[in-house]
Image 1 (cartoon, one colour):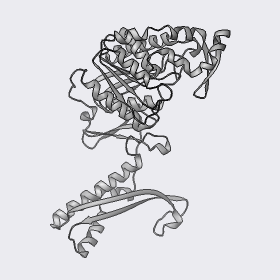
Image 2 (cartoon, rainbow, N blue to C red):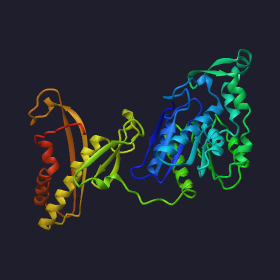
Image 3 (cartoon, one colour):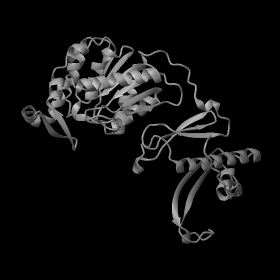
Length: 393
């Protein structure tokens, strides 16, 4: 049984993509998560999965080889096709890139293929444990340390990966190919990209991931790669359908928050007919894909403050040109708050700084500051609030 994860856009996906991770990695590595999320943001639905014996998938890694990885890809494509739609785009990272090139001939409804840091020959992966090859040949297997973890590599793996007709597959791909590679890649040298590109027929494209490392550990590099893939693939995919989101089904004043399936905390927020993303910052384990819950709370207070002041100034016909509100949230000791009822422990403290732009006189400015405390969200935060929770039926 293979473990997979779907990353989906807020509306109907423009197309479905299948993502293959790097050697001994998983669907949840930074590169896989960043690329899948960025493709989802661009309107794609993405299935990323763990190869046999890795991540959450069943099976024994020591019994796998490159050909079994290709079989896993075909099985994942079959599942995606049966449950959601054809895998129009194949994306593979490192050895996963070599795998999608090999699997493409068996996934006939794939319209385009993209590789990231892929070797031109699957046998390149043996460079990562070259010092153990003699032991594998002699004993039939050996315990190899890869990325700080121990893996059992058997002679059958070496034999399989060394006998792949990869150059012929690339030449016979007959589908648009995008090759992305970092010039400074120290794991899979850039010359692999040259050989891969030269073996392929047109249409083919190459994009340099300048400054990136092999694993795309920087979010900016992975997002750039995904954005390039999305823009490039759009040329070869069916026309985009008009997006229809579930937010259109919500009444005004109703908010729905659901997990996006990308990252540790990212959520999709639907407010009436509007949609946006919420997340936590990287400092607490999130991916910073959107504002945090407390940032959204501050935004609600700030938004309400600006609207209230604008409405009041309009009624009074005062020369208010603009309003800017800056808010911060933190915790303080209750004992340090002179006008708070709570005296023990800590309390929440929101600091609100209001900038009134325009030729207002001192009296008008003072009145505007009083009115700011009358905005509905401000009054809600200071009033007794009851939250009733029940499980959906």
